[in-house]
Each structure stands twice: as structure tokens, then as C-alpha cells.
Amino acid sequence: MRDRLRSPPQHSANRFGGGINRVQSPWRAQTIPYASIVIASLLPVILLADVMPVLPPLGFMMLIAWRIMRPGFLPLWVGVPLGAVDDLVSGQPFGSAILLWSVAMIVLELIESRFPWRGFWQDWFTAGLALVIYIIVAMVVSGATLTLPMLSAALPQVVMAVLLYPLLARLIARLDLFRLARARRVG
Amino acid sequence: MAPPSSRRSSGFSKRAQYSVFTGYLLAGLGALLGLGLLALSLWQPSAFAPLRGGAQDVVTTVGEGPAVARNAGGSTWDSIKGYFNAGSQNAALREEVELARIKLAEAEAVAQENERLKSLVALAESEIEPVAVTRLVGSSATSSRRFAYIGKGRLQGIEVGMPVRSPRGVVGRVLEVARSSSRILLLTDSESVLPVRRSSDDTVAFAEGRGDGMVRIRLINLGLNPLEIGDVFVTSGAGGYYRPGVAVAVLTELSPDGGLARLVAAPSATDFVSVEPIYVPEAVNASEIGPQDSIVAAENED
Image 1 (tube, helix red, strand yellow):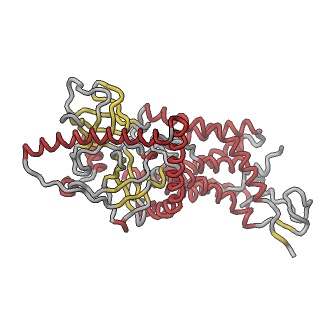
Image 2 (cartoon, chains in turn cyan, yellow):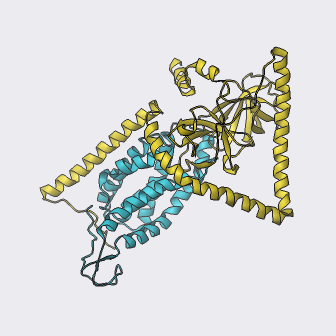
Image 3 (cartoon, one colour):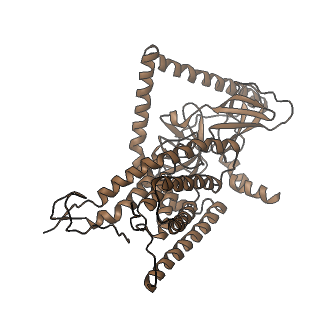
């Protein structure tokens, strides 16, 4: 949407690859984040988890990682459509991701306006906190009867989610390079 | 590194101020919308079933491939393991013995059941034809609810409430049906309750999911706990959904009002599951209200 990082088309050829007669593909630049979030939402469905939740909420992780690493790209209301997609397949009651993702976007925006200059560690801290809160609140609204064994069963999921953030950040950096690659030939 | 496009301070630009404000407004409205939808779907769990069913149909089609690969991969792994232990036969034989043990417990249960029934009335019992035989293609792997998906739905004659079982025992029951896929409530889900009895006698109990892979066995008749570790529980047939005598769980831990049990049929370890018709549809229809409603009604009475 309001991506300020769009590099001037006739700039050096080596930053985002391509030759001097290449520019970014607008399609690619605008869709990659949304597509990657939707795919991350769909991916866990394929895994068969019969005992306890085994994967962190990949869709939500992808959303906040994009939000943190590319502030200003995702519009503030994006939690509604993307959350709806996640709700359709995640097994949570419909509306839980719409609510939680929207709230997360607002909160991250507030954090951003409070701390405009951040480092990686602070980002990790923010994302980790967001994930822990998200997983617990999602469990509360899932419609299940909360029990102690269920909370302990969610512990590996929480730990994995927090530890996976740096990896996801690298993945998003790669995706971002791909997104902004100068792939379209002009003339 | 400077923040990429971080805080565009809106400054004195009215346009920028409005766009920031609009963003917050839309996001806030979105959150309220989500809250409303969430409340609606917690109040009426089946309200969004058609919507979810559409998405489910698409996802399960994609899931068929990984399901085949998962089963193939699992069995390859088993035979490699068997080879390293004592030849590939070992694994196969062990599985067979395990199956035979379960079957033995079930047979015991059947014999006991027969005896009981014969004493009451002579009932002609026919072999049950499954409605569909299929694979589990996916599950809710990130949620704390335990649902699984199969790639067969209304078109194949599947209906809500039908029991799902694997060759080893009960897996769960159908919760929602879409055109060509269905959602299954696994026994491990914390909202799943199944009437069971001990295979060796008539000790009746409820098997409730705990949400962490174990089921809680809660005896109906409280008093001295007659259970022992290693007891096999089979479906009792109460409620009309499941046919009696199918293996459910093995007791692993004792507690004052029953115990903790491990499921006999781990859904992730099964190749194929069969969806069976509801055992006594009359009994299910007679109750008129679904299990969800009765829970809600019971809560309202309190």
C-alpha cells in the first residue's frame, strides 16, 4: 500500500538484481506479503496433530513479522480479511483471528509510534510477547474447557513460536528481496 | 538502520492526519466485527459451517497428497525401524500381536455383551457396512481444539454425528459436513465425551478428552474405584451414536473417580478410517437435542 521503500526504477542494477532495463513487478511487490500470510495459515492444516497443538500459529507469526519488518506496508485493517481466511481453516471459532489479528495490528502500531527506532532484539521481544499472549488468548476463546493439562500441552507450542521468530525474520527478508526484485523488463 | 518507512508523522497535513485516523477507525471496527462474529460462533457453533465447509473442501483436496505421502512415509519408517531391530518382520508381527490383543479384549466384550443381551431379548445383529472408507487428510494443528478433516462429505452420504473408527478403535465422530469434506471431533478434544464400559464387565463410565492426548475415565457409579491399570474400555453403545464393543482406551493411571487412559487408536498412526452409520438413529433422534444443546441447557439450569 504505502510502501516507501520502492527503490527508484533507474537505479543501480545490483541492489535487487536484474539489468538496467528491468523494473520491479508491481504485482509481485504488492501481493507477496498477503500470499505468504495466507499460505502460512493454510500450511498447518496438512499436518496431522491428534494429541496436542504441535505448530505455532504460522499465519499470525507471518503477519506480525511482516508488520514489524516492513512497517507501513500492511494497512491497519488487514487483520479482518486475513484473519477471516485463517479462521476458516484453523479450527478456532470464526471471528477469533479477525478480532485478535486486528487488535494485534493496532497494538503494534501504537508500539511503533512509541518506539520508532528499534533493534532486532526489541523486535523479537515484541513478537515473542505478542505470540505468547495470542496463543493463550486464542486458547481461551477456542470454546474448549480450560484445564491445566491443556495449558501444559500448549507450552511446547509457545516455546517453539518464540524461538522460531528469528528464522521467520530471515525468511521474510528473503521474501522481501524476492518481492522487490527487478524482474519486469522495460522496453 | 533507520526504520524503513516507519512513523510518517502526520504533522500539519490534514490529509495525512485523516488517513491515520481512518486506519485506526477501520482497524477498530474490524476488531469489533471480529468480536461480534466470535460471540456469534461461540453461541451458535454451526453458524458459519457452510462458509467453513467451502474452505474445507478446497483444503482437503490439497491435503490428499500429503496424506498419502504421510502414510507411505510412516510405513517406510516402520520397516526401516523393524530392520534395525530384528528384521522388518518384527515390526509387522508386533503390530499384529497388538491388534490381536485389542481384538481379544473386544471379543471378550462382545461375548459379555451377547450374554447380557440374550438374557434380555433375542436381538438379530447384522454386520455394519461403513458409509465411507477414507484417509484423515488434515487437522487443526495450531489450535487447542482437536479436529481432523476427511475428504468425504455430503456427496458420499456422510451425516453429522456418524462415528469414525480405524481398524484399532474409535477415532471420533463427524461434527460438520461440507460438500466433499467433513470435520471430525477427535476423542482427544476437550469437548468430546464418549460413553464407555470396561471390556470385562459392566462398569460404565464416560471417556472425556483432556486436550493433551489422554482421556479421562469418569465412573458413573461413584464409590470404591474398581478399575485397574491396563483395563481396556470399549464403547457401551449408550446414546445411540456408537455401536457397542469397539475398543476406545487403555487405563494407565488411577484417580479417585476413575483414571487416565491412553487412546487405542491414535489418528496419526492410522492409514484408513471408516465412517459408520449412526448405530441407533431412533435413539439419537428421540433425544431431539444435540450434545451441544444439552450442555448449554444444563448450564442454563444451573
